[in-house]
Image 1 (tube, one colour):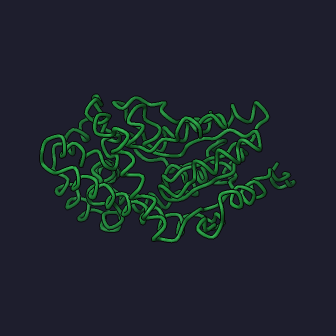
Image 2 (tube, rainbow, N blue to C red):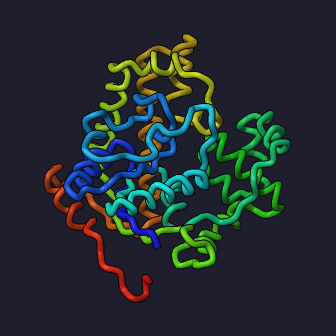
Length: 314
């Protein structure tokens, strides 16, 4: 099976810088598991690693998909699996870094076989308001409706598509991770053997880092970046901060209101990420608030050492 080391955690925690330093020491290559950094453009809005960080090690799946194209967990899984194969063919370790929980779980567990998008059904659902989508989902699958951000139109729509296409609740089908999971030889390459760490910080420190990063985005020109952006897919349009900056450009809020709204939305997103990783993964937790950058780098370097395969892994 494929093997990789994971560095996962919430936005603004410092994953990218740490991962790049570890990869530089190990001659490893990095693969981003970020649902929005995979899109080309909007580098400031999606907080892509800066040029100095990118120069430390080869990076994959950053800025590879046009904004107008749809991206989902299965497309990501296929692209990531191919990239990991290429990295290993060069005799290098693969380090996966990111905060998109579903993308990461698609790699560690594979994906259940879910229905393909039905264009007619998609068009019908797309005509509904977000509130109507959530209301209909709550009737068909209350468990999934509770778990999805009520403002995340893309996920609401996909969950409804699954319910309506299969006649079964999406929550029932999401429990089928193990069907394509680790050790399933009927789907070779569907999942990878994963070790790794879940990095986090004390809440006040993390929130302060988030607030500063949003302020820096505006200082560096994120408003013009969004103004110049072309057509976007439904998935890309869910980027945090996009709706608020568009409202700013339309004169519906002040710049101070816009900054504060994005800071709040990002903090809420980080809280959801923390909950996800604590519940959904077995990666070792690592509180970066207790370590210097160099101490964290050394510790991650040791933990990411490739382990020898046992007979059961053959």
